[in-house]
Length: 120
Image (cartoon, rainbow, N blue to C red; front, side):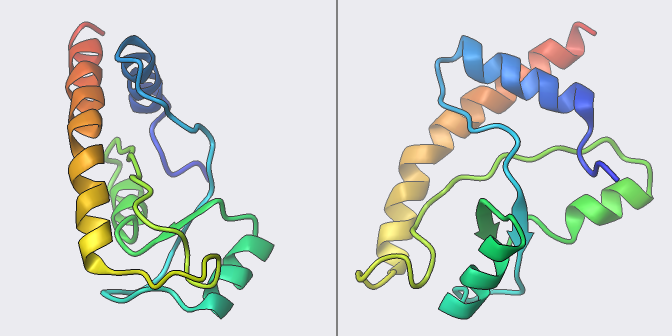
């Protein structure tokens, strides 16, 4: 099935384009239980399955929303290299800094998408 709502996705794409925010479309999200970083083995497994982004915050909301008939879409902020893809240690300080940089862009895209959806 297609878990994300096409109308909301379209509004997010339009808003990102109008806001000049880089958006990588059509990624494949692999969700792992948190709160913890993924292991290098989990990253390799996800990559073999075709995942382009991994995290712990995109599931199970999307499945539950779909089951309830709630229109849903998401934006994933990439805030760190996956475990095993870099020699550098992943720290919460680095993640928090990346979140600070990305959240204003994400909010701009979401606000624009809400305006697009309000007009439809």
